[in-house]
Every structure is written in C-alpha cells, then in structure tokens.
Length: 199
Picture 1: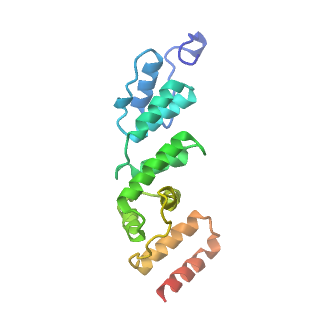
Picture 2: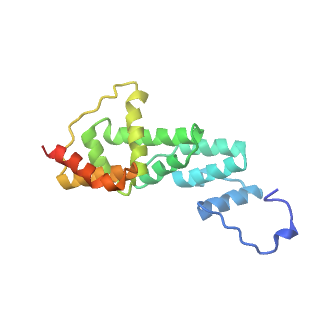
C-alpha cells in the first residue's frame, strides 16, 4: 500500500524524510519495490547490507531478507568498519538472527586479530579508536564469549603491559561515568583505584 497505492490526498511533490538510512540503499530498495531486480552483490559493505536487511524486515519481504542475510554472512569485518559494525550489534533486537550473524562476524575478527591475549586486547583497543563506553562494553562481552564458542578455555593471559598512572585514571573515570557512578564521589573513587594501582 505504501509504495503502490495512488492517493491524491498525500499531495504532489511531497518530500518524505527517511532517517538512519543510506540514500543509495533506500533507492535500491525502492527500485526493487517497483519491479527492478535487486542484486545483493551490489551491497559492498556490512553497514549497507544491514540497512537493506532492516528495510526487508520492516516490510516483511521474507525471500529478499534471506538473501540479504546470506550476503551478510559472506562479508567480513575490517579494521576501518569494526567500530561501526559493533554499534550495529547494539542496534539489533535481542535474539534476532541478524544480531547473531553480526556477533559471529565480530567474534571471528577479534579471534583472528588477538586470540585470547589480554596484552593484544590492550593494543587492539588502542588501534581501534573512536569507541565510546557502550561500544567498549559490547566488544568486551563478545571477547568473553570467544573461548566458550571455540570450545576452549576462557582463561586469558594476564600479561598486560603496565599502564601509566594518567592512563589508568582516564580509564577508571570513563568506566565510572559510563556506569552512572554518583558525581560527588567520582574523584574519590578514581583516586582510590589509581592509588591502589600505584602501590
């Protein structure tokens, strides 16, 4: 109805704003709704594939949705798309198939990049800048699941290089702020953590 019904009451030349969607992805979807074949291979990266999946899910186009999921499974996470894809995981509904696919992709990337080494995790976080607190939590949750999914031990190497006092303070501050720790006791708690670490 949305795409095919002629309704003069909607007015001529009306502009409809579509939020949180790439223009090219929406145009591909709209062309498909008007009869043009959608070539899933033209969805070059995970964010555009995810955007197309959202549209097929919203308008319940089952056959196309399955093709989009298959396309997503064939794609990989790269260093420059890592943070974006982790944030897409955060946008997914709980227990959704697309969330499982994205988490599997991110887990494979994490496993291939750093295995289960905490020292490599430190370097990984430094190299993949631009993560806010929520994104970091999502990453760490997925890291914690890698050992179990591979059937191996969840124990990790505790050989992280020592962080400077200033770095420790910044990390603790960001974590407490993310947890909505009471502001009037924030400095006291940060000092307690960093003082203990200096001993």
